[in-house]
Amino acid sequence: MEFKATIDPKAHNATGCAVVGVYEDGDLGKAAREVDTQLGGLLAKLHGDGDFAGKLGDMLLLPAPAGSAAERVLLVGLGARAGFGRKQYRKALQSTVQALGKTGAKDAIVYLALEDVPDLDVAYRARSVAEVFCAQLYKIPDLKTNPKPKAPRLSSVSVAVADARAAKSAMEGLRIGAAVGSGMSLSRDLANLPPNVCTPAYLGTRAQALAKAFPSIKVKVFDASGIKALKMGAFLAVTQGSDQPPRLIVCEYHGGKKGAAPVCLIGKGITFDSGGISLKDPPAMDEMKFDMSGGATVLGALRAVVELKLPINVVVIVPTCENMPSGGAVKPADIVTTMSGQTVEILNTDAEGRLILCDAITYSRRFKPAAVIDVATLTGACIVALGNHFSGLMSNNESLAGELASAGIRADDRAWRLPIGEEYVEQLKSNFADIANVGGREGGASTAASFLSKFAKDLHWAHLDVAGTAWLSGAQKGSTGRPIPLLVDFLINRVRSK
Image (spheres, rainbow, N blue to C red):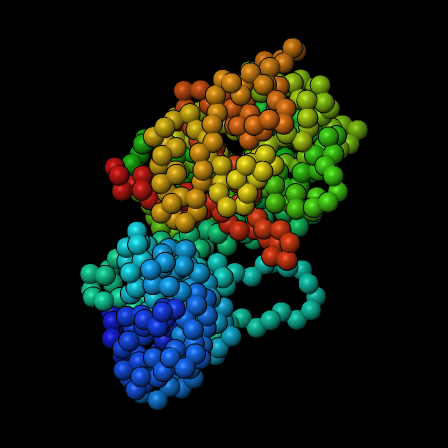
């Protein structure tokens, strides 16, 4: 998909489809007023006659409208003007993509970015266009044998703006949005694949392919012997019940100054989580193929960073393996020694994500990072606390936590701060080891993050629990690609704040 900015506040440009907004109270959007004049008052009449109510998400296609330079005009309901904000704007864009996909238009001009959206400047309004179009046009890599539906003919989308200054801002927003969309597509592809395809070895191969496509990325993939040499005892404990060999994927991108401290992004890469000996209940166990969403996220974020050529150093670390039950699987009451030297009593083998992450956090220290952020589908407790709307955010650094929370708001990919601290670490006490890997049902998201904090001392560290946001269940089952928009916005802001 090609995204462009065009100066066209009067809606005079020729296009396969002009997309204009109409508010519920009959107030025509900025471009819609121009189109209404061209069409002799038709839009106002359609609303007045009750043929188009303008409710949020309403669609009406006008084919071959006489008087317009566009081959089609698509009316989009924006809802009440007083309530029109960023969520309504994105909803209108989502409906636009769905409607355009059913037409034969090869190109379109979207005039919705001309509307005033509180807290969204031209760049962010344009960025939203690219992100939403990429997300809505994404197709799951399914293995069905029936004929695939034809792809929409739409190949070019322009965002209309008022002047040259706005066009420059819009182009930058579109560039960012397209890169975020590209990263999300990679992440969603990986997470949506079946676990017999997307194995730890496969993830390593895809990381190497990413480096081949982008020479600015350097990749090293450690096998089981390499992981053992690093003394990652917690990581190895999780993988010992599986026939699939583990991998530790390390990607380095040097876009910033030589020697500048990098941001380390760590992603949980459990390609299938049966729960191990602490076996999960059968319902929805198939969704445990999404337990590598953290790993997919950080690889997707890296792709976006590289496409944007951000002047920042980034290291991506993905510990990836399966968590399976077998005669060789780790058992409740086993004690393992982590890469840091701390010992862990494993009371629940289904609390495996924190075991692979704690070793990855320790490994990240060798890069002397400016910040370490881990992303993981870590706890069902986070879903209970926040539902499927917010990712959980926990950190030992107030400034870093604030940066991430603000990025989530700007990117419409929000995270909510949850507490960590010694009170939660108390729940992880063990009579037999330095720490236990679980601490009871109460405050499960916070105890899991507090476990990780024991390995992140003296680091500027944050944890994103995306168990509720990384994928959807039910009829819309599939990866969401979150929290890539948050992470990319965070990194962009880090560059701009230097």
